[in-house]
Length: 123
Image 1: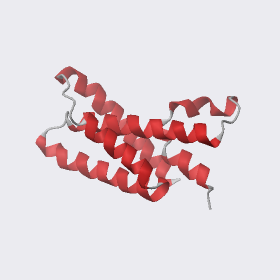
Image 2: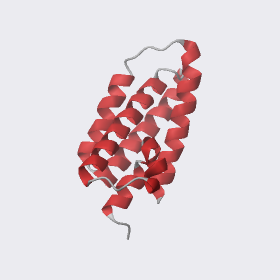
Image 3: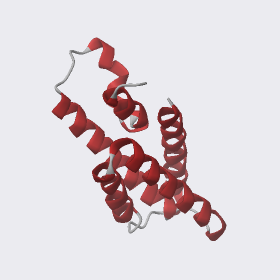
Image 4: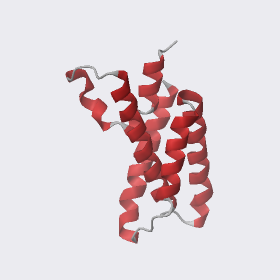
C-alpha cells in the first residue's frame, strides 16, 4: 500500500513541474511539499476553468464531467480542502474570457495536465 506522501505526490504530479528535478534537490519539509501541491492544484483548477471557456457547447458536458471526476478523485486522495482549492480556482478561471487564438494553447495544456493527472491518480 503506497504511503500518504506517495499518493499525494503521485496524484498531483501533473501540477508540479518542480518535481522533475526533485531527485537532485534535498528533501523539503512536509509543509513545503504540501504548499507546492496546493499551488499546483490551484494552477490546474485555473487552467481547467480557462479550458471551459474555450470549448463549444458540444464539448462543454465532457469537460465538465472531467472536472467533476478530478474533483472527486482529489477528495478521495487528498481530502476536501485540496478539492476545494481546485474547485475555487476552476470557478475563477471559468470567468476569464480568452481570445480565440489563446484557446488552442490552453486546451493543449489542459489535455496534457488532465492526462498526467489520470496517470498519477492510478499509481
